[in-house]
Length: 106
Image (tube, helix red, strand yellow):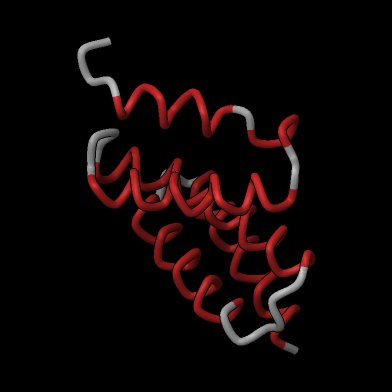
């Protein structure tokens, strides 16, 4: 049932984003990530976590700003997952955003 609950949290987050309810979306994503932590550490869980983290990046950037430390932390975690899953085509924008955050003069 946890996997189903995780899927519903991500769906609820996407629905909140569609309504521009970013704080609600972030809350749903956090709850989903907490549920994910109870699942076995495998490729499926990592892919789901990457889905959550990448969506969380967008909500955090809108609610807290691009330069917020929490955004950098979420980007770092997403990048770890991205590298572990070897999904460059799916998550190449992480490198772009992370590079922009590490070079504020650009």
